[in-house]
Length: 262
Image (cartoon, rainbow, N blue to C red; front, side, top):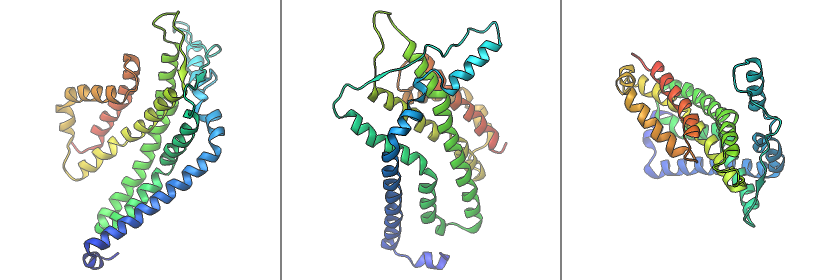
């Protein structure tokens, strides 16, 4: 849309354009949710519940790494198995629906961003549009990288530790389906959002709002703030899970510092 056309649009024209974009976003999410609802039993067996089994890819990697180094404590996958229980009558149905929606939101994230971009783009200059296009690609890649880290690293390590942890051997762990899914979806979705931090830093740096000296000056403050953030988004209160979440976030802080101008 040309700049003169943009200026001629009234407030209600903008509202109508935004409504059109939001309707398309809802349609995309509904279609994705319905599609995932149909294949959710397969996804549960082969993807969502995969970290419950000892042959999960991260566990097998740890086993090979520890077996290759004699002085490391040996990591075994043979006897690891997490069995979930359902304690509420309607939980499985509602989890079927909610999981379809949240996974649909994750998978359609680039489409949602693109539709929002079509609404914002007419108000930008050509140079700004090129910068936003670059940010769009980087943002999508970083989001899915965060989701992958959450699924393949953060969640399995958290599950493995907590499932095997006992305050007393007289108290067996019986993990509910609701608890498992709350932790699974939260860690994966939040890690995807957190991995957008370098993109945000890059955008602020390109606007000359943020400089590398800021990260150096406030590094100690950032460590405390990131520990608090990790404690907030961590579904459990144990120090191990806290560090599993904190370390990738701190690494993103250092990457962000590298991306902004000195």
